[in-house]
Image (tube, rainbow over all chains, first blue to last red; front, side, top):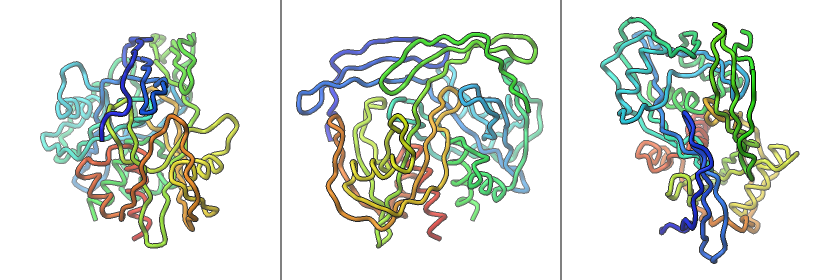
Length: 177
Length: 177
């Protein structure tokens, strides 16, 4: 299938700390034009840290965009030039205080491709070693550990609401069967 | 847990067709300040249309943000004042040409709460009746039907990359067991 949305014009409206915003004018197959609002994001990783007794290490933090605390898997944005695997190790240590040299790539996905190019790569982290958490200076994070089935229940009760976390937990539920 | 990010200032940078962008200046517990880039989104629904022989009706469409065709579950944005259930019925018909009066709400989630308030509510649609698809004038959509296990394989091979679709398929895989 060929690209059916040829870019006629691209206007950069905002260049920010984490995201950029641009408006593309595209030509459609019937020669009509349409506008596409596009949020550019550097990409991110999510980590599923699993302990020897099959508990998942989760982080709870305040999310300004939705004005509530969310229970999530550890995650973070890619720094410039950073490989996803290195980012996963770094974010695991920073947010949870665990180190691991046994990270296994699972898959990556787009969070909301209707308007945003953000990709999240998921890693499974085993053989966790206790170290010291090093959160960013504007991050306030609490660590909690749960069994998979507790997390599945939290998804069904909408106590877990974050896409990367739901994907990670549903995946690992199948994986551990 | 109390709200630890008090809004000091909120600047609206862009009011668009689908999304808005604002920058909030927040005060953190240690009296430091930080900026939060926030994309406002009206919310959306996703539908898992399942046929009597357990096939899932999928849509393939070009996504400008990531410059590729994606295989997804039918989905769409909420119109102003529209209930998620009504939106799910409408999008199912518009995108696939199927009607259903048997839609079951599953759960909702945030696509990327680090910077965006988008919520997607997922519905399971059964008892599908053939009608006529009515795509929006700037939508070009192809319909394809798959078994669940084919879709699971496509997730593992990264041929399905969209968060709402991965969540829907992993959920339904567990549900149908």
